[in-house]
Image (cartoon, rainbow, N blue to C red; front, top):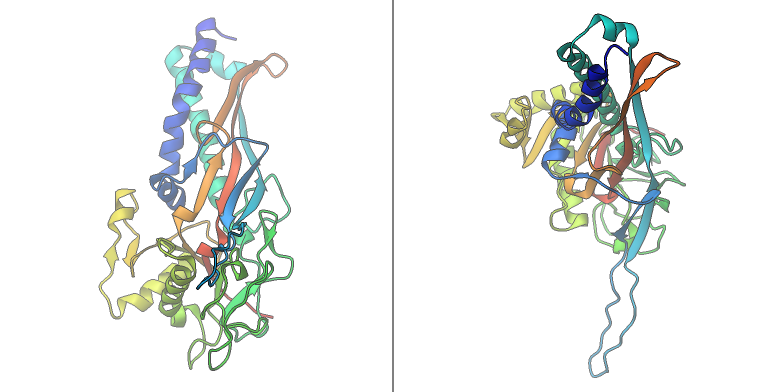
Length: 367
């Protein structure tokens, strides 16, 4: 290497620079920034996997008039388990470059540039994988698309239901898999012809849909005309909010709705014909001035959101967790004699944790 001082400058720059680089990069991505602001980054997650409890049923209630109280143990929780995904970005700073760029200032700037690029690359991957459908690759994050594997019995069905075998955290998301009953009293066509109940309207037992997300089919039979997202978008936004709130309880209503850019534009075209659009103050504080507030939700677009899709999200029912004390970790820079270079690695070891019933997808589902 060029000088011992150069080696010390490189080694000392990385750990000090990483936290600021992470925060700056996260702030450039809407959903990651929103989750960070909402306190949904969880650090120092222990164990070889992530395990947590969700409420899957209620305690039993008995009639006891004139009788002694009955005490029956109730198992109201179900454990979900997911593995840690691992993402890594690598780069090198070779001897020749360091010899040409002599002086600690030049070397430090090169080190900062390498870290900037690596952090941005890993953050881009995390942001993109928020939306992936991943049911088989343990190295990838478990994105929201993993929850939304839906089917319809007819193209006119207004909602989709999880396909047979759909799981999350090792448990089935299929309606009624853990038992329970649901109403079948509504007059007219059901929301989904695969099932024989009124879900997601009506009433039923907690265990019937404790792990089932809502999937709204915007090309289903919602209106008298040709059903499209442009025609049905506002109606479905309202349906999603009411449905998640009604079946999830207090605090369950989605705070954010995120769309692919073309879906976002069509929603704006629909709203602006009757209403004055208002910029979301909360999102504006995060640095995203092109987000809106509609029916109590922040409305935004995301480059990484898949085409033809949108999602209603409750940040309090999800988390991006890391096994480290900050979102990403760095290994190095480490001098490698064979490579004659300092090696840089920035990585992420963690995953996304969801409570599926508090989320909705807007998509087009066909048989």
